[in-house]
Length: 168
Image 1 (cartoon, rainbow, N blue to C red):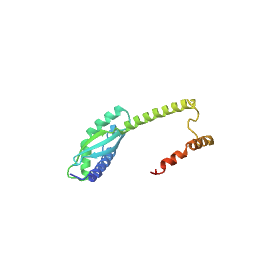
Image 2: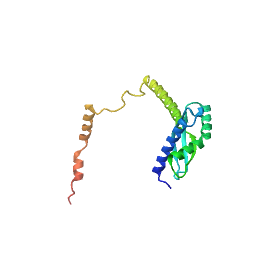
Image 3: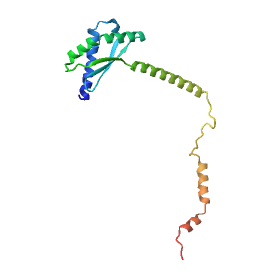
Image 4: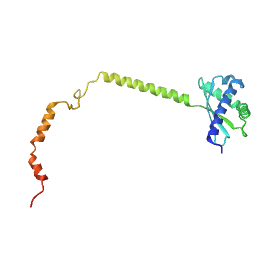
């Protein structure tokens, strides 16, 4: 088994080689709007999964998938030549789901923004159900005078008798 650091470095190098090969060596017009986003390599360095995105619609994406499957042999030969590893990994191309997930996330954020704007619009016209300020204020002097009167009204002599030791 190879170490994971070597697998990551080799995967990065494979992504660079494949992108360069698509740009310079493969002359298929279906591959004009392809971007290699990532490559992953198994721990035994035998299988490489190359992730790509396509600028265009679903028709362009399916045509790109077909073009990549036809160019896999040429790209694998180039990877083997330029990496110099004993066993050239097999290449598997997978359409990257990150752009679709990003679009979906943008849509959800836009819906949340619209909902927040609606709540803010409703809140601007709203009036409180109870008092304007339902919290007690500690700054009123009347409340503190009442509390001190309540404490002084208790008979302190009862407390003193309870605390003295009883004489026999």
